[in-house]
Length: 229
Image (cartoon, rainbow, N blue to C red; front, side, top):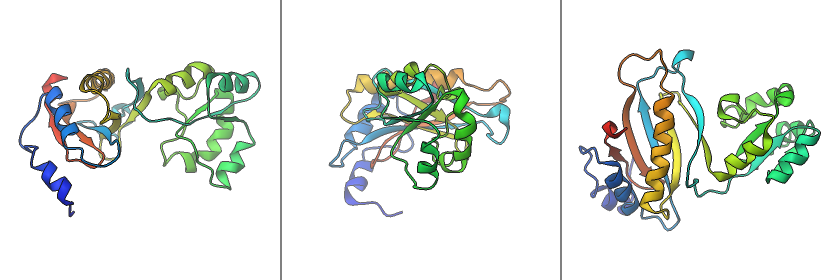
C-alpha cells in the first residue's frame, strides 16, 4: 500500500520495534496526526480469543469519561410512554413499527446507535440483515435492548461505546479526538482497558491481550506496552 509524503514523514517518528508506555504512545499518535481535520484516535486490541467459540466471545459497552468527541445520532424503537421518554432524553429519532419499512425499503440509516425496548425486538429482528452487518443491531449486552431508554440515551450521548471482537479476534474502538488533551485520552484508554480486562472469557487459556496499537485516522500505528494493563 502506497502512503503519501505526510504519512511517510510521520511514520519515521515511530519506532516499530518499540512498545511505548501509554503516555508516550498518546503523545506520539497526536504528533503524527497531520491531517487537516480533527482526526479520531482509535485503539486496536489483538486478543488471544477464538471468536468462533461462543464462550470466548467478547462484547460489551463502556462509558468513556471524556466521550468520543463525535456527535452520536440515536434512534429509539419503542411504543407508548417509552417514545415520549426517549424524546425527553434527547434521542434524535423515535418511532415504532412504521420505521421498519423506512429502513428496509428506503435504505434510511441516518443514525449511529439503535436502542430498542424488549417488546419491540420481534419487530426489530426483521432488520437483522440490514443492521447486523453495520454493527447497529440492538443487543442486551451492550445495554441497547432495555426498558430504561432514558439511561440508554443519556449514556450513549455521554460517550458510551460498544466493543466486540471482529472476525480476526481484534477489538477496534474510537477513544477520542486528536484535539483532546493527553490526559483525557489516557482516561478514556484506561476506562476501556479496565472493561476489556474484566470481560476476559473464563474459558480462555493462554495470553488474553496480545497487542495494543494506538493510531489516528490517517496516522501510523503506535504499539503500546501491554504489561501496563
